[in-house]
Image (cartoon, rainbow, N blue to C red; front, side, top):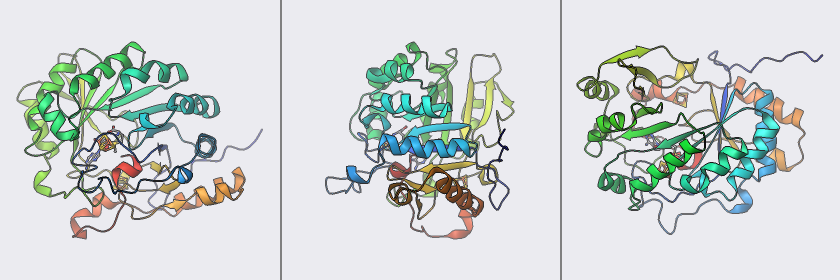
Length: 339
Ligand code: SAM
Ligand code: SF4
Ligand code: SF4
């Protein structure tokens, strides 16, 4: 019997526990807080196909992270459903890693793909949904995409057995504060969990200002004015959302206060970009190139040792330091690394 090697732990005592894999840096939306069209226009250079990890390469890297003790693997992007044959990738990963597999999507193509994804072994899906008001939703995705098609995608996911679904809304001052209560009203009784996310200063293109953040405290006040809420304990170490249940038992909500109540102390997440770079923080300026050794023929043991040593040297805690940093240091875009 081989000895069990524990998950690597970083310099701040945080174990590695989950991996997000971005499968493309492209997206069919231009959400103003993520891919503003001024920055992601016709001249923007997306990753060429040759630089993007193939399914075989993703499967190998995922296998290495599974051996390092990953308990969860989430596929993201850009918009992951734009990647050709995503169900094919899900099938490979489900077979090779046997990990809990999840997907984060804008939901625009979910109606067409939900059944194939579930059939391939996807366990869970999170859908980004910033408003139920069609005009507000179109303004936020900035490609005039109708909310009804995302709602059809959510229904298809339910029918395919991908429920309960997490519905994530980024709340931005002056744009969609009025979406908070209707989102909870709409999904109470369905078993789905609505989560509200503070608008973050990710990337370098969204012209983030602290004034545009609707703090978690205010989101909660709006909810409390309408619903009776009871706090819930975190589901597991590293859970980023603070959770509440509706006192009548009709639903659960979460609030992710990345700006006003950072949770770096419990951050157990690694991120892999579509071109095979490993990031140990959402706000990192640079990643570690895993694709080069992968394509140069490194074996699994070498790659595993490399990732172990990278995690062991990790000391990121950007959100806790944010207030003292000032300015806006260089960093990767959310659409590249996947949130
Ligand atoms: N395209 C997919 C989607 O929208 O679900 C997956 C990738 S997207 C980058 C992942 C998540 O990041 C989405 O839920 C999105 O709302 C969130 N996000 C993007 N920019 C953000 C920002 N500036 N602040 C907070 N969340 C952000
Ligand atoms: Fe695309 Fe998701 Fe970013 Fe919106 S949040 S632009 S859907 S990657
Ligand atoms: Fe994790 Fe970096 Fe976010 Fe802190 S700022 S919670 S270390 S990703």
